[in-house]
Image (cartoon, rainbow, N blue to C red; front, side, top):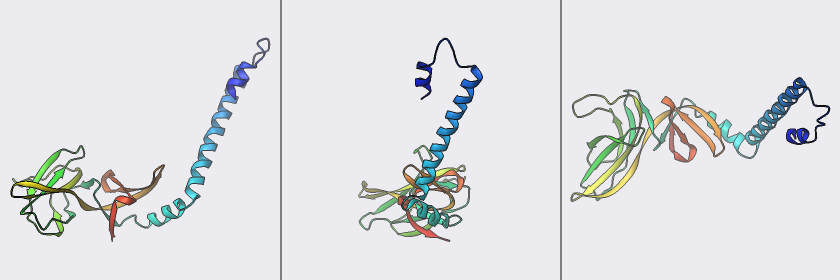
Length: 184
């Protein structure tokens, strides 16, 4: 609209600079209001509004997810589901960049375990976001690799263009699809 106005402006009677600045500010304000209205409509539309309200009840609770979780030197609860055919299972810890930082032989059992984040010499890994995977072997050959889920506290919920996202302690996040359990 502004471009059309400038093209059709009378060169013998140009618009004053202050009028031009006022019109620019008005156009900017209208554009921001339109975007705000669109975002509000998205929140109230369909299940998103209800989903946001429902997920807000998750704040303060813990979710189990394979997304990276924050380690602050407090133990993390991991869900270990190993394979019956494996003769050896390793828990592989990955940092936020996906680099392997720790590998621990954990046996072939299943269930919840408290991960301490300690190296073999007893030193703790630095605080940060970590993800985990199991590497199952039989007769020295890797037969399976799978993500390991960990519990993390939900500190907030936000709506994105792709749907709801849970904000986890320490700045991590997970989509609702990545959550497999919820606990107090």
